[in-house]
Length: 104
View 1 (cartoon, rainbow, N blue to C red):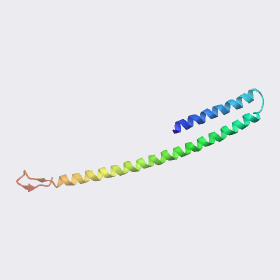
View 2: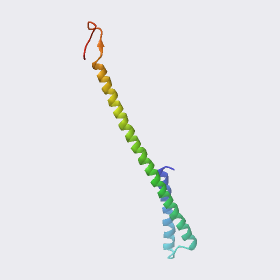
View 3: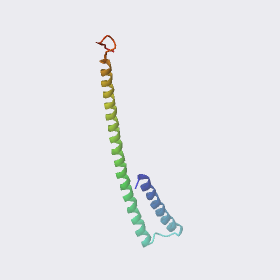
View 4: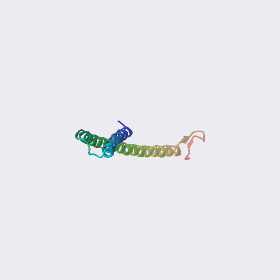
């Protein structure tokens, strides 16, 4: 699942939990044993989803760092190539000028 899907699922479960509590509150009672069991299961599911979100966020952060490093390396390589091209252009032999090398 994507992080958006995980967050959406977590919110759906939270909504369900709020509904259970609100129903009991309106009926001026505590959760029944079955409702409490279900509520506890939903809490566990929310915790699992939050753990999954943490893992996804860590993976995204790692990929972002990797991309930044790659971009930095690419810029460094581009700069090096441009410097080499510029150095080569200054040392081009120009045969059409009386067969002499000319520094540009």
